[in-house]
Length: 289
Image 1 (cartoon, rainbow, N blue to C red):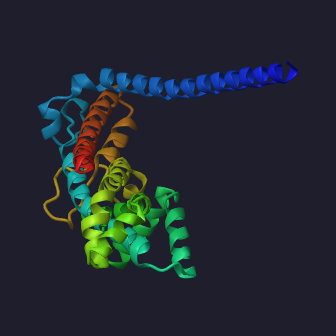
Image 2 (image 1 turned 30 degrees about the horizontal axis):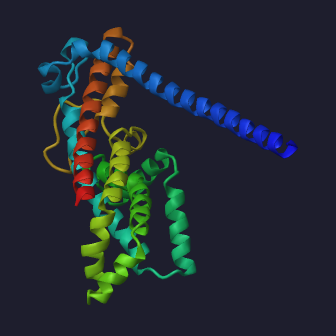
Image 3 (image 1 turned 120 degrees about the vertical axis):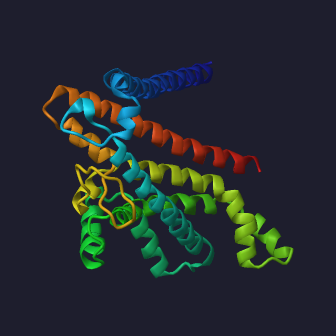
């Protein structure tokens, strides 16, 4: 009897602990969701009335009613069109080498540790690195190319780590089966490992590109323009991006510029969600395969 009572007390204690932690985790989740919902509602109320075709096709102006986001929108597209393929190719290639070719040596472990640590380095540090290497040493100046290369350095560790985890999750039995059928290492990687790991790799790409499109500090350090009345026509032209333009509007004293900044945030969110939707579609397509 005493043993049964002790067992019942332990069960009740475990159930109570489970209920308490369930409530804490649910409250934490709801807090984040509610805060995000309130922020989005505030932005929509503040900027929706200022979002029209003129806002998308005009350049920034000293007058809020004439301000547009064209230069920043085009500049962001230019930068991401360079950053995305560079990051994907270099990041996935590095992950393949580290997981499939590199031997477990002291040097490879040092490289792996440094890559993992670089993912947590503040973005301003990458801005200083880009200013030193791309702007001054290579002489690219405050161009689209310098900004794209700086963003590539910033998000490379994220996609490398995510790609490594996706490749590492593929069972060794699939590789052994491919080898047993006569395939070499490269054929196994291309036809077995990468197709299976591609959904996880795309998840890392979504996270990394989402960070790149919203960064401001590194671009300010390398000299991206806060105001520009033209769009880039080559990778060596000056540029600005949507986060920098939004920050500039939000810092203005006139209250109407805050509404313009809200409209800019809406455009940035639409672009970001559009990029993520494409990546998620591709990820789900490969998952079904």
